[in-house]
Amino acid sequence: MSEVSLRQLELFAALPNFPTLSAAAAHLHISESALSQAVSSLESAVGEQLCVRRKARGLTLTPTGQDFARRARQIVADTHELVLSAGREQELRGPVRLGCYSSFAANVVPELLEGFPQRHPGVSIGITVGTNEELLSDLEAGRLDVALVYDVSLPTGCRRRRIYATELEAHLPPGHPLAAAETVDLADLADEPYIQYDATPGVRNVADAFTARGLEPRIEARVSQIGLVEALVGRGLGYGLLMSRPHALPMSIEGRPVVIRPLDPPVTVTHVVGIWPADMKLTPRASALLDFAAERLGEHGPTDAIPARTASDDTAAAVPEH
Image (cartoon, rainbow, N blue to C red):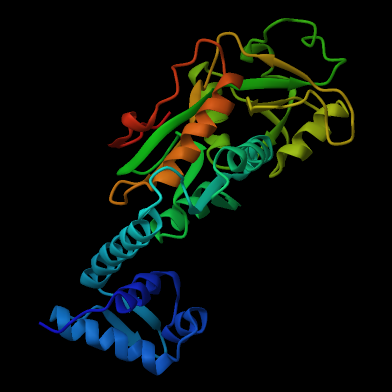
């Protein structure tokens, strides 16, 4: 069998991230001919075709190639971990790439970027903020170590760790008749103008909540930014339904007050979780970051929440849909 170098594995592990061989070569700072030769050498060693290279259709990995790229990525990651950990058992060092769902990123990322480097100064954090679809794609492609998302409508085969509990809350203008109540019944809001946060999985959460009660919301506006939802609520144009977030202030981006009330009976009580592919091993740095997130952010969740998981509680299973 032909010898395979770590560099060849590193190059091939990156191919799923690019539509063409030339794009991959440019990103990897290698000539296209050298990259093509590395791929051909790997195919010769494996004895199977790993990718299809067509000028008109770009680059497509075969099923064997996809599996090979996934395993190569793990070998490269394990090798990097071996180098980083050698002789440094008492201190974590190196990078960790964290993805965060956009709707609560502003409420959790500052806490992590401020506090975690103080505890682990040898670790550098890279942050990617995006939608569920974007974060899941980045995890699968190996561009992220771990991502913080809601544990709703996630694919099977994810490992997860609970970070903090969260629940759907009503956001009301101060002059709303229900603003003085301690809790709000969803049925009392159904006929009111609703400012919908138009993003996955929020739309489904709210739709399921109304359907479970035999109700239907009267949607006044659909917007894709939480800040805009609260701005419209602050101006008295309707109410919003948003998941509770750490460090959330009862105020719109315009400085207008917003009244936040829990729903009774409660709906969509769930968790923000850290997830990563089941076939990828979580690095010590990523594990430490999740522990820190659960420690700092978990205290802001509902008081009756299930305790956050620790490193020993990692699970690989299908995440139930809500």
